[in-house]
Length: 386
Length: 92
Image 1 (cartoon, rainbow over the protein chains, first blue to last red):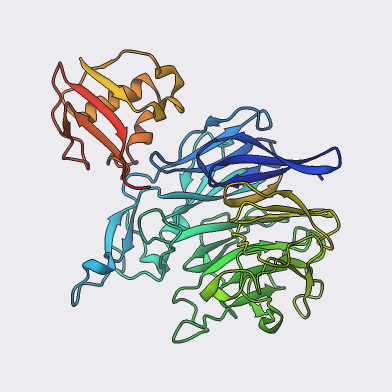
Image 2 (spheres, each protein chain N blue to C red):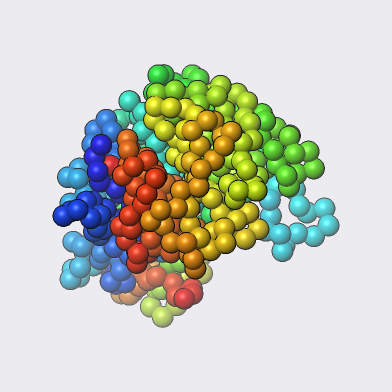
């Protein structure tokens, strides 16, 4: 248990630590820049931050001295010839003009980072997974996923099928493109990786990224003509697996909370809309018990605010059969905090989350009670122990 | 050599450029950006994306004129040009 929490915000990177009995934030880097994700590589101890500068684009930053100083890392860019299928802007579309066309891909956003024993992964918009096998000195686009048949096939060497099952996310910067926001590496076998993409769904590789298959069975899309279709715009908000029982995987999305006990082969809806546990972005999975997970629910994807203006954390200890609503120490009136997909994390007994209204809450007893660590930070994008 | 002036915002990321007289050889804006990249590795990817297009919220002026070719940066630069690289004021 490190006890330090790295916070990525709209305006910089903060560390929250316990000093003199209370949790306090401190600005540690990237003042004024958007920090989509910041985390420690557990293998090397290096801190990595995925930045989104308003003017200067997406940049990767790293610190080798625990956050005292930060420097630009070797940068990630789409390779020459990388293309993807994109629909035209809706307002420009006349009759018969809505078909996607092939466009060059450029890096719009670094959205998440993932770490394996021998690799660093970066999830991006427009949907590319980048991999470094030299400690972050260089990153390469994973072609297995980029050239996936569901996305129209190999557009480096030809025009592919002309059809894509990948849609866009409003989180893209300036273009309605897909976003890869979750990367989880199986602790038993680093060749098995799950990624989640808004809006395409969950993909799994078991050969280190050579080939990928969709893992959307059992998910429901209440907004699609066929709610159980393999494709048609699955929008997982986040996935997380149990470290010591990696076949137990959790997902939050528009249409509920979904749980899989067989490595995402099939999913089961386990949310309970009547008790306000249904819609939300982040999920934290217990590292030891695959049936235990935490969420910070909101009120449906139509409103995206807290339920009745009160903030609570939902916990299940039985694979989603039942949910507890944990409220001690959290504001229970006039609280409209929204917690983004990367902004909840767990480390042993400790849990922490941050909200778009700049609040950070920490629990030292697995969510039973909460302490405010900050109230006036910029909007919080990511919370990771490290 | 063209004289290059930068928004102070870029000195946050390239502090060694601050206070320097930036004189760069080039007959097009693209060559000027490449010249800046040689002075400050990483500079080009701040101003342009990976296919060389000027980023949406960045402007370059040659003298008083804003560049017209934002895709390949072919606007002409002469020996005595003043080239300004600025953030675009594109909102709030």
